[in-house]
Length: 141
Image (cartoon, rainbow, N blue to C red; front, side, top):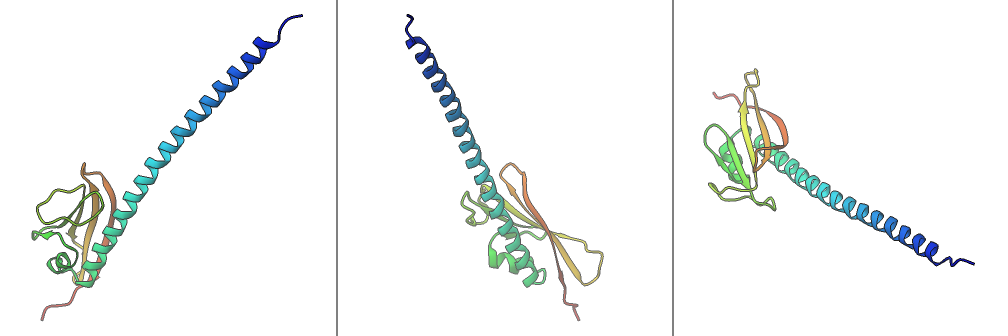
């Protein structure tokens, strides 16, 4: 009569190989989900920063200097820019950060309607989120 030991060893070897493949797949899925989670967090922070800038512009009725005084950043007469570090903390003027918010005036086509395009980008210039904002301007007498 022949021994069944080689068959049992072969069966255990196959089970170990299947387990190793399943474990490798799980590790890969966990790594991908972590990366996806970080990308979503960055996008959510970008949305929040853009919305805050848009609301500041609306509250200040398009006065970019006043809005930059509220949220930080610099207004150079053409665009309002804010630099952020990795944790989305506002940096001082002139510092380069990991993220940048840019608010640029746009032409609404209407006399008393001010508009701007507000965009958040990463260091490489990839757009994370963009929003157009409008406000009613006060006529000058």
